[in-house]
Length: 284
Image 1 (cartoon, helix red, strand yellow):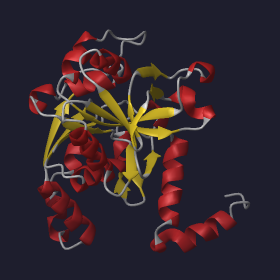
Image 2 (tube, rainbow, N blue to C red):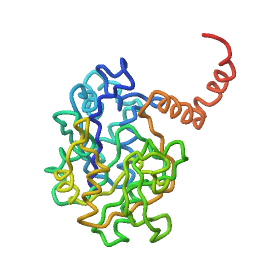
Image 3 (tube, rainbow, N blue to C red):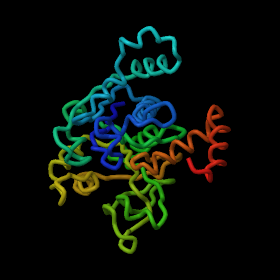
Image 4 (cartoon, rainbow, N blue to C red):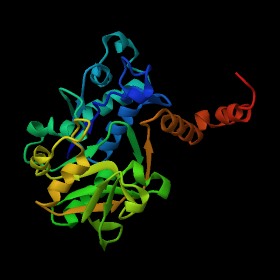
């Protein structure tokens, strides 16, 4: 399976931390977010991964490369696990020349993807799913004939509708809809459904032509939701309300929440964190 991971965003919500460090390298416990994403792709069967980067993102490449200074510490389990991960899939890096939106970032991978269908995972979202999310999407792709793009969806509360692209359409199988409407960040009263596009996809290569047909928005960015509207004129699109949980780390609040939830689930950190939370009323 080929997988593309867009990781070229500027990370302005985390400034000044991200002035010279990619937001995808921010840790959740002791691993950077991008490592969780690559692990997720490999668990789904990915053997060819393209990470889309941008200026000041060199640390992403360095993370998955061997470090001579740490060669003598190769017996450390954490380093062994990372080395083993890097050997399970070919990892390629392609630079987006300017920050022109998610769809434009995907277009940077076109020559590498070629005529293959491919998975997409965002570089700042972690999914805990069984089976892995991309495998769930691939199964729907095959079930629907292998010629239609598949979107990962989740039902969101009313107050979050305006923060997402919304997909709507009739249910054609368990947890699966035939997408007939796509609306980018609608107001609640204008939203056709509560099923939000979460940022994971299994796409046909036809999406690249759709992206080229899509004009930039008022900020000069090409939105993937807009490109998917063009894609619907060419082929069917289905949406799957996936089984599992997503952890968005795209804002400081969400990143902090992910760290807390992962720590509470880990016996190594759980008890100490509970002590700290119990002491939270004491000023630092």
